[in-house]
Length: 117
Image (tube, rainbow, N blue to C red; front, side, top):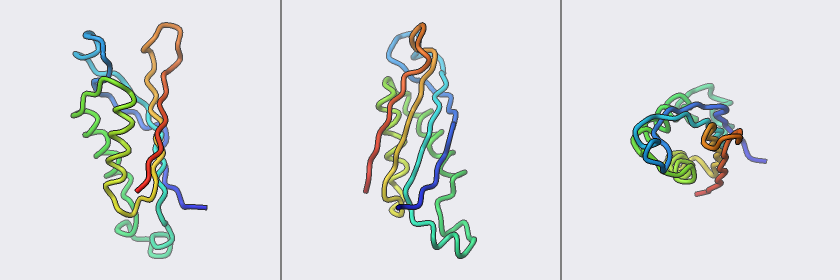
């Protein structure tokens, strides 16, 4: 079994959507991000340099999604995967992106992607 570092219920406000009225306002996406990475070194050293800094990763994801202004949730999930895989220590990433309020009566649309190095 691989070690996993997760960002759960990570809220990002960004432009997301294909409709004209969605292109001029931010909406909230909620992300679950799980990265597979060997955590044995950081567990032994207790040193942030030996692991993925999840605060820095969260900031990078937020900035990328805000800049991307994606039309599709699928694209937003792909952007997150690509950011996570920039770190060569990350073996695999699993991302779920939820967009609520996009369709009357629908709790949320969810896209799940899994990518590996």
